[in-house]
Image (cartoon, rainbow, N blue to C red; front, side, top):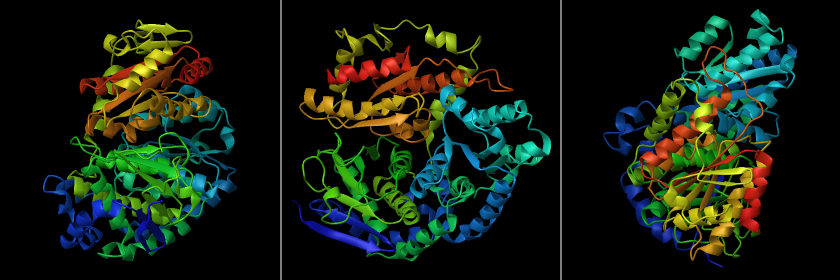
Length: 562
């Protein structure tokens, strides 16, 4: 087993770096220290990422002060939670995207509080939330800019559902809480309707907002302890200005140095942290912050340390969440210790990874606070929604290249040439992944009802190891969530990805009041908008449409295991 070479522990967190990784990052770390990065970053210096990034960075560094600034929030949130309980509202539903959904979900799962997170437009998943007891439901709408089409659609859908249930006027207002930037269109609408309004910090981007009202309000209203999270983060704050014994700086140096030498995939496995959902939040933060200008770090969240895809590989850096030096949980399928392990409480981990990601972006020379390629998919979605005579019939009527039972294969001819069944299609995709590349599975389906789709990640990783001389990293994301997680990296990062998109028939649809489209049409527009963006940059992409979701997923699994 490799020798543990460095353990950096401070502020309640510990980062363990093993073997040759220290040698790779030592020069980078020394340069960061000599350039004064720890003190400059902790003091909010906007020039750390170059002159082009400085204007935006100057408006996006408020997250460094959130552990202190947010200390007034817990009392306010406790007051709102008490008022909601007094009104009989003990079922909390969150409508949001990106960090405004992923951070609350990670907190709720770690703290064991019930919170329904809707960062989806799937009509089956949203419909299930609508079928709950609306008279007990508090909807938290979280959108910092106040202009996201998906969040707006969900707000409209719930408003109509409350109205249909006879909930109106002042009673309706009690069923909503809104978190958004002051002065946003959503803030104005919420004020006019009399909804509870919590201001989001205008100097913090969504993926860096875990310790703000955007990250804390939904699960606090569901019963989580916001004050405890802030206290955990506050313990790390003094450490961030230190040039040495600074675990966040060390982690950022490793991430950046690894990408510079070609290890630009970060395989993330749970190893005893108990922080379920943290890996998904890390994926969003790291991929969307670093993946641009042809560079970046792609997190590959796996099911555990023994999962396919967590084996040592030339282009993969492995990190275990929660394991400490010598723990069996730090070892993967090969029995070899992972190069990195990170342990510590959730509040501190939020701040640790944000700081480390900002440092890695300086090493890579990219702006951590923009997401230019997310806008491309959004523009395509808007164009499709403006198309005449509705979207769904146009999309579904396209002639498939191949039909295998319940599964339609839609792909350019060169990607499926010679394939006669699903096994051939999927193996062809795996073979198309170049050295140093990856395969991304993107499922525009129901996270609960179609949970079996997530199993495809491990099945494809195992199949890839069997049919290729070198295994290919395989990521999995639910659509449209992935548009705000790995979506930026897919279009803006290294152009070596191959893409498998899943869509499916839906026996149910939900109208969006005041809009000329339904959730089903919006979901398809999001899927096709992203597919168009991927193909516009020359990336190989196949769409599999499931005529029957359950049967189609079973057929896909059989194609990979038979």
